[in-house]
Image 1: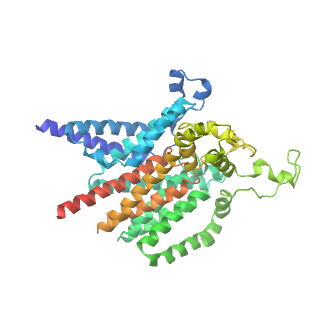
Image 2: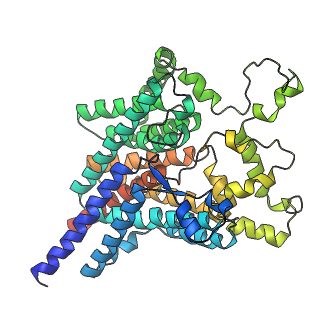
Length: 461
């Protein structure tokens, strides 16, 4: 092999690294997105389908470019070993999404959904694992993510301090407080886990400040609790003796810091997860009561009404009530109504439940598990849990096998981030722009760290 071939191989690997690092910086910028309506019109879809076209962002382009250079690199090196790192659960999720597309009413949304799943769970995952192959590169990727996350929190702080910005839009570069919350439910436990294995006082101060500020600007109750759960679990895993200090810190934040803030954080967090709006209202012509009018649809949380409708569609014995044959309903349970087609179908399952106005429903308040189960099928929802559980197990196992403080912090933080992810997914969708690449980054960090631990173990033999 001559020097020119070796140079080409090195260049492609460097390009993959640069593109992955650019994705780490760019992926939270979900508000900078371009709708795919033009593609739908080009493909001849109806205007009804086109008006609900998905969007793509800068990081989508960067990820696919990284994937292209990764394939080129594998061909030039004749080395396809990185493919062995693909988690079976991630591949299963992509395959199930592709199968569900067969039954989708909105084919454009379904195609975009399958492409997005392949982009995240296969292309970006492989690119991240390949790019972060050394400890120095992994450290660079982790630091860059924390830096990007700090910028997100500072952007959200500007929204938070802006009195004219309502709580829903305290979101920084994200679309709403809910998808920002889903993102921070991973980032904050990850930073906390790194801190718990750091021996540098400055790193402790930086991570503690990042976490505290993140918990202040998060005003979505479900993800806020998810972040706390992720941090609490890994604090206890690090040392049970640390847990009282963690609990005291949370109490100080809620009882002493929150009351001094310009917004009513505690009240906003609580009301965001209430099933019923119990605020007093005067009677009007449209709502004459107290009494029966107090129980009108707009008083009930659309989130939990939608949960009930979705769960009804997923009840195996409910096929008669839903007007389906057993075979048709079984097919829905196994393969769903089509990825990206959840909103098109959920309305028919409300029955006698009051149906909220979709235009007035707060964005990104869906339960990811119910969305997956209904649109892609129950096996897909289980595959998602399997996927996150796979990496939690890897992180826990490898943390015991290494004495490197940085890697132990990555594994502890990764386990906390994925615990936060699983909890936050009850309250918001996390396989979306911003949170989706963030999730796969955590997978990639754990996988890259695992390969480093295995390599060290082999060299020691």
